[in-house]
Image 1 (cartoon, rainbow, N blue to C red):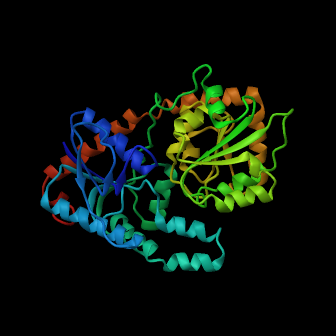
Image 2 (cartoon, rainbow, N blue to C red):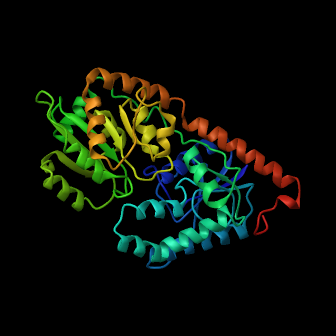
Image 3 (tube, rainbow, N blue to C red):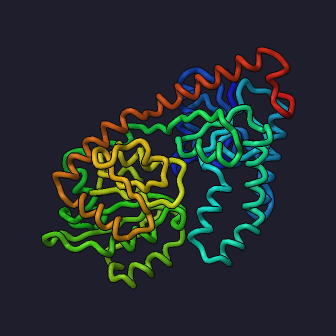
Length: 390
């Protein structure tokens, strides 16, 4: 098949960006002709994959979002594809993967955690208005022939906001070789590089967008940990965002010297292998690639109940579910559970076994099956053609 995969930026890091990169690699390995439509792709995932530059213009984010959608439409008008699969909000496509959830839902969630004036400003921000407008056209206006979700939670949101009933769930996949438990001596070597004691209790957070992903509440919960027999606790934060407010909070709570912001300088795969527990206290997340990465790395994991990733674990067996991500006391209690070495070992082994069920190959296979359905529909005649003439 000749496939167009669409995402504004595509690379090996991040969430949706990494998903598209991995999917393109798998599809190319299966012999498909894959075209990446993006404004930026720093590294092709396979020699057979083609990069099609789509320019976005304007000094403001909302103009870049709109102009990218316009640019994609122009490419699709010039060239035909068997399947157009978008992982970004554009005007029309065969399949829209709602990997970032429902923007309207996120705005409602954010408003509950922001001062009223900030919530009002968000509603007036042109970026949010453009995203909601394009999303409405895709999900309710017929712009997307099919819509897929990456969790049952995401599918429910789409049904609730847009009355769209047929929303299949295709879970994310993880590379179990890239994300794996540490080899003998590797954990200690990683800690030495980071200047952390071999016996320290290391809490790890990975994710960009600190407000949405609940870092504030993790810092508050971490500050409530007591030393366990002289075992010092550390909090490592990996991701892109402004660290200043959170460093200030950590200092106010007396743990500033044990909270370290690493930016993107250390690959997450190494951080997972050097940590004792992974915490994802997000306020809103359709799934979270980091959830599968941490599970595959054999880490005890604490997932917010508001993450789609929480729905794949069995609480207390292969992961721990944080029922209220804003509750610092609950975060501290779950962290203390993971300080028990026997419990941590049991959770880590079960986590690895669970992650092996969610491979990149399995995700690609389910996606290909949907592609075949789309192609079959198109061959049945004009009634199957999308708005826009494809």
